[in-house]
Length: 187
Image (cartoon, rainbow, N blue to C red; front, side, top):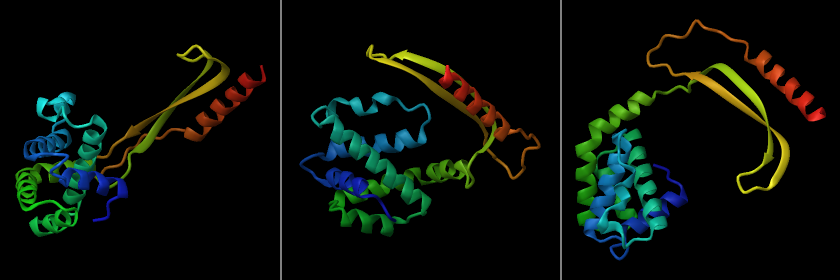
């Protein structure tokens, strides 16, 4: 598994018993699994009283690193030995490795279902809508006096192998939008 340097640093901070005691590690690990697997996950899960002593920036960084590693492990269908090897490389102690592997095994099926529902293809653009607005001031009351072009793309996600019959002229709509923008800037 190839993980970015930022994820590796976050994971190494998570491995440090000085930054995350055993209870905080358990809470953060469960929060990472919960945020991935539960669509209705509470955003305040990181506001647990036992996590208050940890800097919020570090907490979010480690949460993101743990979630990224969980997703990568699920994507590669990692087994316990693969997980253990990477966690040992990140300086996790034996107790934390066992806890991580147990939590991963408990949630592995749900994680694979989640990853399988995402699919392998990108969504297809089915329609586009646009509008032109003129900004006079920002929300900080700075004068702007410039046009802003807002484009909304409608997409269709394929759950099965069928393809849509619907077609639309996206190029024509985008050309119309660009002409309208040119006229607005000439005024």
